Amino acid sequence: MSIKIGIIGAGGMANYHIPGFQSAGADVVAIADVNKAAAQNMADKFGIPTVYDDVAAMLKAEKLDAVSVITPNKFHKPLVLQALKAGKHVFCEKPPALNAAEITQMAKAAETAGKTLMFNFNNRARPEAYALKAAIDKGEVGRINSAQAMWIRRTGIPGFGGWFTTKALSGGGPVIDLLHMIDLALYFMDYPEPEWVLAQTFDDFISDKQFKGPWGIPDKANGTTDVEAAAHGFVRFKSGQVLFLRNSWAEMNKREEVSVTFQGQKAGGCIKRLFGRDGLDETSIDSCELYSQENGNPVNREIVTPADETMGRIRSAKNFVLTLMGKEKPLNTPDQSVKLMKIIDAIYASAAKGKPIQVK
Image (cartoon, rainbow, N blue to C red; front, top):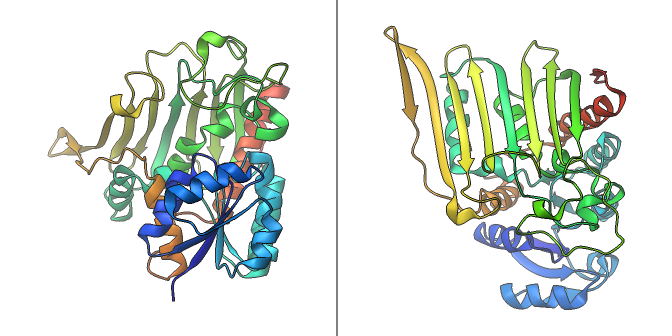
């Protein structure tokens, strides 16, 4: 008997969630969105039989095993809690929530319900990430002492005045929007317990339309733009490991870069995607490397993996279904999301207070 999934939200990421679920053998049987026309368009595209404009109605009428949440960040927590209360497994878009308090509540609700809760940290599902994680798990790298996580853009503001730039709806700017490399670095480091964070945010260019990205949502006249344009930070973990992070939508960089570099006791490594222009995947160059010393000589090994222009988005959704089927282990867990959001909270708190913040 196949797993039946309902989609909450007809946004662009549904173009990856739906084929990912279907590729694992799940049936996507319904989609709900307050904009019923948008839901119908997505339903027509993927052959989804039923459309709703109310989530509660879908949860009541359909015999669903799981739901996928694809909405602005503010609505992640209430929709996840609603679905868990209805007895459904949940796959939710990133970020997990607006802050650590919200994701802590969500994690407890999933545990109480006995249901799987996962998030779309799709960069863990990139072929390069699978390859590096396999090398780490085999002991080729040893303990990772330090790592550098970067997702930087030069002209990448996703619209002005819309929900992306409104902190009450998004939770923040590029720190929370582009959290993937922070998460990926922590994943490679075995998600150690954070101890303290020192960070600074910058709002240069956040209202300058020269720095608008080639995607996102239309500008909203008289809307709110109260998030950062860039952030730099440093995290120390209780284990003694350290992480440097740099995220930006608008900063004076040569080009967009998405990367994690790490230094281990046995080897170092780097996973990187470079863009010719911000946000245009067809210009990207991917690389995956390991660095070691052998017989007194430096050895740099390139790991060749299949190309994936979806950056793991389809594979990540597929993993959710295969996890429910018991065929794969989950690529992420709620407790990891709690640690991640505690770090993000501390980044913003440190920037606001101008001092290091202890993570509790």
